[in-house]
Length: 437
Figure 1 (cartoon, rainbow, N blue to C red):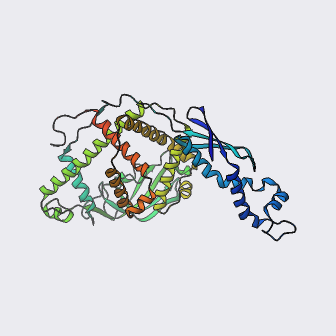
Figure 2 (cartoon, rainbow, N blue to C red; figure 1 turned 90 degrees about the vertical axis):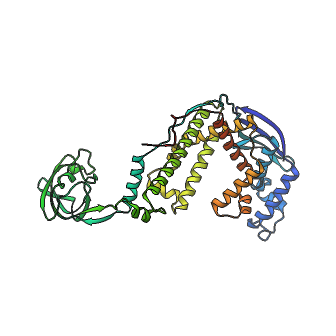
Figure 3 (cartoon, rainbow, N blue to C red; figure 1 turned 45 degrees about the horizontal axis):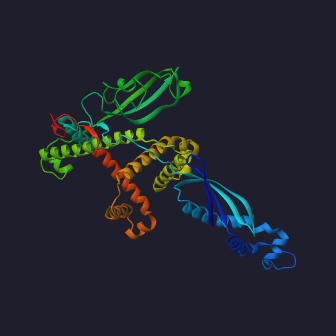
């Protein structure tokens, strides 16, 4: 295959004039004849035994041309891109201009290339880092969540129902004196104050005692899902069978020993404080990086082809489909469940794809301008991390993963670190990271 000319027809769009020599073309046509002729019937010959010249005379000289072009297409495209030295992001058209035994293939390949990006002002970007503090209340809330997870449900006796109780009830609902569908249940467990039922229902159970029969009067909301009940007054006949409540464990050293590796409440609180501080430090760092990324997106200048964004959408959807598959769900099934189409999904992910393309272009330009490159040791370490993450031998990862892609990703990560190191980060008040009383 010979690249005869490279013509820039639009911004980021080129037409490559190509030639497949007659020798290469005829060799491919002959290979197609040997595989396809077995399917052809030629009068006077057994099936698959007719010479190529007879087949071409019977069906026409061009009988194998289309299959030959299909067979050559991938190598034509790959060699053309390689010879052009262009950074191609998409092939948008392939046209055969002339074809024949004596001419070979004269064709035109239209490609979209990666845009040349420009960026200025990426040093000294101003961002704000939020203060990182942990209060006594934060620690108490965390302990409360652990208490909730370790609670037990007990039967309540000797008092009336109150918010937070689990009321075991029979209910039978009436509208205009008639029962309605879905308005009756027995031994239903309702958590009072949780807002599970329509407004006013749970509040009217509060104050009643086990064994009582009573009415609850409510009004269905105007936007209620059942058309026949919207805005209607209703009466529910209630029988309160039982009251239950969560019993939380006491917060003491014994509790700490049960729920953690520590022996004392003081040690446990110190560990919670450290864990919360670490978590919030990471969140604050991530927020700073997001601010920097937003700034890079604003500063990058490039004529981004639509094809580049659409390719990124493809990548996002493919990754999403793989995550679904790992959970035993096909993308088609997900779309049915969510009443969405593939086009809906593409529209949903397009802003994210556009953002990712701009970020990548900006970071790549920064890495180029600052001479940022990962070392071979860093690339090897990243391959090892991928092998560990996927539970695969390192050699298998190296065979599957393009090292140039890994190198580019690492360079972009280092570019982010460079921008961060040169940013003007407004620090919080003195005492960041210390516990606030």
